[in-house]
Length: 362
Image (cartoon, rainbow, N blue to C red; front, side, top):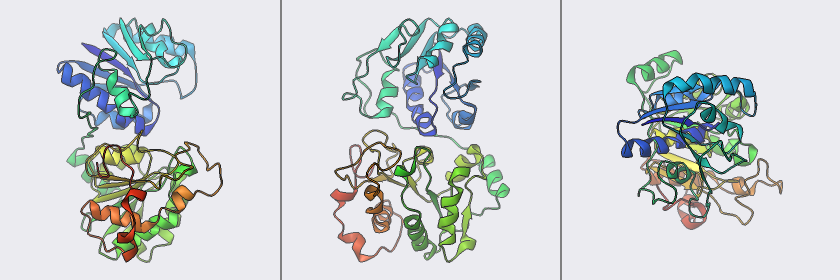
């Protein structure tokens, strides 16, 4: 069996898509899996042992470019794919498998895709609340029970590339590493306040840790704000906007603890099995939680959240502002990180702060 997977367009979704690849390999160990995906995602795909190769999608996100898609599909006919699974729900994402003459073309109904997909399924969101369950379900016949537990994303890193990345950015592992991921492509409603990140960083710096700040070029203002608030800036390395995605993955694999918004980097840290505290505000861990067992998800579960809006519709951001740094420090303690937390941290009611898919610590 030979699969062409049309991959998603977001970092976190691409990481979670590995659950589908694992499910396919468990059923068909000799199957070949290729993933058609945006160029930026290839470093993620290269770290998935289930995938033979990533194929760069030459069309940008949102662009139609029918001629380009047709020629790509035509060029893939010689590969002899037996199955295609289309993860995005858009009409245009189903065109390449159709034009590649792949006999079995599977996906959720999404936009008008009748004829393009010939195994077209209606999504029952109540049955599959988790994004990973929606991906894994496409590895099985429609309506079939899913494996329990669900597969967990697990990215593989290479010692040599990890060491090279450390040398490239003049980083050392002589002190334990706290990785902070304060950005979020989705929008500001998913961003925990910068001064709260700084408070967590201060607590660990006082105990001999170092801090590595991760993010894209768009996140440089917030990472610079965090670093400027720290007393021991020589032990804080602002990597936002300077690393490639490949280097960011390799460097995150070295973290002794990670604190992150609900973001693509959060899913990467989870897939690297790093001790992780994930902070949720406008989104829900009931839909896209980190899947690693050594993680804690924090959410106040206010009446107005999750709203799934890019910006707070009420203008106050209480779902983030009222989730105090002491709670994150307490959550790090749950994960075995030796941190000294103020008395207020132990006085919190965990039921107010912890939201998880299945348990408080996955």
